[in-house]
Length: 488
Image (cartoon, rainbow, N blue to C red; front, side, top):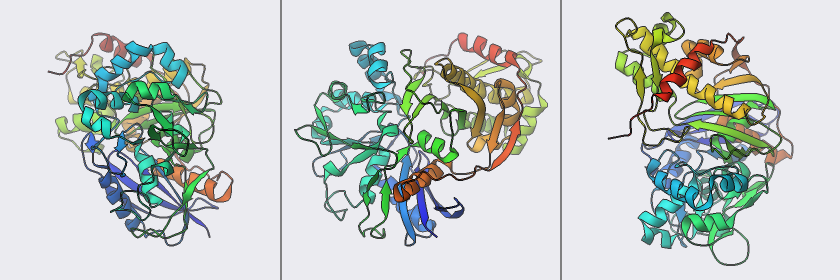
């Protein structure tokens, strides 16, 4: 029996799954926490990866491994492989003014045409511009720029600082994959290449591809879906000779883990919310609403992301003083439309629409509508309406959708399932609970090992026929139009 391992290095934690290559059967798994905050020392991710591997029983019998991770984060390295500063994560919005500056200089249409995306605070290019402007001494030290999963793959292969690694700081061994590269705003999914002029515009210094000729800040070499990054050397408890896959961004990892195909719209409700679909052709949206990412299987992944997702429910549940089960009961006790109550849940600003300084808005309060039940349901309807609008924006790009795959911890909430069937006009399928990002990485590891994409059966927890209630979305958009106040 050949075993493959997949890693999900997410914002909140590191998860490792170990599966049978032939059947996909879960053999064992482990997890470890990540620090909180929007900037993190990458060494914390490495420590968590080693802890999660240990919790999963180690890798002694594993033939291949791959790492999927949170997208967009900026890991800046100096010539000695040292991290220049703590990594800025995707949800760090201090680079919002930098995003506006880049768009003013290049143009939204031009960015969308060249990279498939229009810069927002989440993307790596805007964080590099922020670094250039806010910390010029650190920017001058940068010798390579990696994404979180790139850096972890590099470390897994045995590279790093001279003091912390087996092979030392060879920056030309940095690799990435097309899905994560497409979230930088300086790589083109349509042309499968870095746009070095846009990279230089962001950081103020020229770049070059790892392993290539010339001088410049090193950018990871982009691998194909079945390519191996290399094999491990013995270090840090990692055995020698394990094939290491290219890795992926978290959403592309989830799509691969779900074995999503053309016609599937994936709605993922985690720390952030995402609506994405698998397509055969690249998408260009000059409004920036839909990011035209690549996927981890050779296709494309048009995606809309929201900053506010499952934590909206947790926040309102805490306000009401109830646990998850009681929150669901309260929400289901209210009628669709929440008695006129609407929550626009921009608690942490918002990425789509691009309102990084916004706050949440609760409207429609009357003596009759202001009940615990309506507030609970308004939270569910607001969160899902934002994601349904994202799904509609993807479809507006000509993407066909025949079913919704609803994933993430909140997907198991009965109120979320009920409201999802009312805000989407196609069948809603809830896969069995699983670590789909890590599962996608495990599939990718198996692909790199065997040369064939593993086809494992997807287990389904529930499915719902559509019961459209368009008034929910209409009322949400009315509340949205009232606007949200900027942060004080």
